Image 1 (cartoon, rainbow, N blue to C red):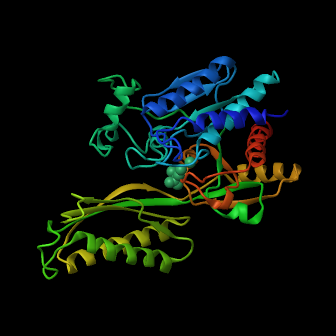
Image 2: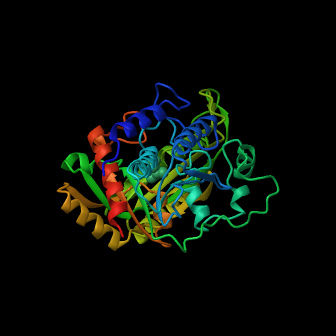
Length: 406
Ligand code: HGY
Ligand code: MN
Ligand code: MN
């Protein structure tokens, strides 16, 4: 039973146009106009096929064929980073939809359901995998008001504005019921260089990296850029510059695939002729071994504090996000490998440096992920791309695995 590959590619090209930054990659943040337009697109497709579409209080979407009770969850996300790529997340969502349509087109029954996890990127609230963290109880009612966007608006306010959470609703339990779930699957682009470099067609994910995000704020003495002598300055930007170099060195010295990234820096007030009074920056630290990740986190935390005290700068550090390294189900991995062998596919079992919602579900149900190559290993950038034949092969493999995994 073949999927309709051209239909999948057409969907992805249509959805690529739903962006707040046309011509500069895809920017589709959760709970925005672009998010709503993408949801409407899914609703139109579901409607044509008579699939049920439900949105929960956090904005997670479930799409079921009429006969399905959702024992197989096919998931991914539709939100993006700023100026991101056209495939991250949405490829897995539309491939899952294509699998459901293929079953329907061929009159076949399936017990699979599509899950669109809300706010996976954390672009709005700074914490990745938000929707799946509510589904698995890692986040609860308190986080509706502790998670805030850059302007200080809470997740609760966004959900009420979108109509997902009715005002005053005492919906204290956002967890999904896993009692009838057999497995959770996700198809995704690799977002790294391995598959493209090795000419692989399918990646079978073994472990999803754990990640810990520190938000460090250096506060010094704001002042005039010209009239303030260099001696005696308490410049948080200089402290940040020193921290950036030692943080990179700490990750390199940790080895074993540990990565650390400073991706966001905000100087305030941010004038070129003003010594900033504060500089706030994030450090995203990951590896496939929690002990190593935590060791690197603590090394970075103490380095940041040492720089601050030596420079007479105040330093506050907030733990903004935290998730463990997650191994996927050995049974799912082995069965995916069997299918790839049967189909003569060039595959490899590999880790994922990117985090994914399906990893959040792994402690509650058998779970696994399938990768397709990213050209030149680029992702989270407008240049993100994958060959159409790889996109179609990945979606076909997902559909075949749903059928084979009895
Ligand atoms: O950051 C990640 O790994 C994912 O793209 N949210
Ligand atoms: Mn991403
Ligand atoms: Mn993603």
